[in-house]
Length: 257
Image (cartoon, rainbow, N blue to C red; front, side):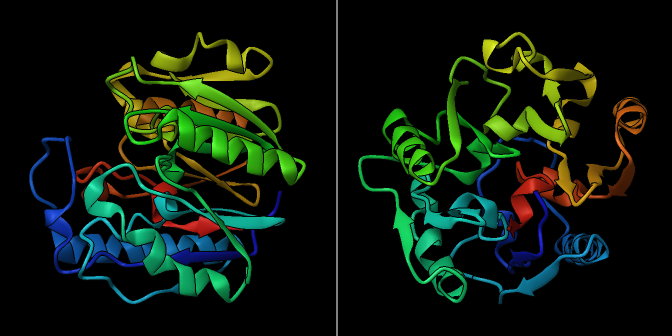
């Protein structure tokens, strides 16, 4: 799986008004914007053409564009975010996606789906059933993916209070390898994979991002960095401290295909 395009949206002036449970203090907006620019440069370094959308002052969480759509080389689907304050974000991203995918599938009520609950492992899509993605939304996505020839598997994380989304604790590292937080390490869904455990004290690092043989990881998690350098090829370390304050991570900041 090779990415050639990505869509991003920088944090707006209202970024600090977004949803968060992190209790790490308010984000520094100028610093967040610099970190976002560094993120875009890293994607470009990996061979991805990045489309930067304007900030959206209507939605404080709009920089986390991954939650608004599921994008594959075979088609794209607009989600229906599970937080009421984010319901309009999928419609806001539609014009940018329609330039590449004239026909967009959509999640229908009462289904809810956040893109952060969907982890693509080389065509095998793990779909988290969470407090943001309900069973109806997860099954709608599973049926759509099956029609496109992908393999969907649902993973219930509602009893894991430390995980906002599935990808808060799961990432594809390449080949048959997954980065997995302790909360998910024993889940039968991952029994056929080589598990790289994320130390509990560094659980935020589980949200890493594989982009064309390069693994983007968050700065500040040395044990995890050592582990993945042993397992993966090129590692790019990025500071995303201000996005962590708003419950966001590396995968959240782009739509990729």
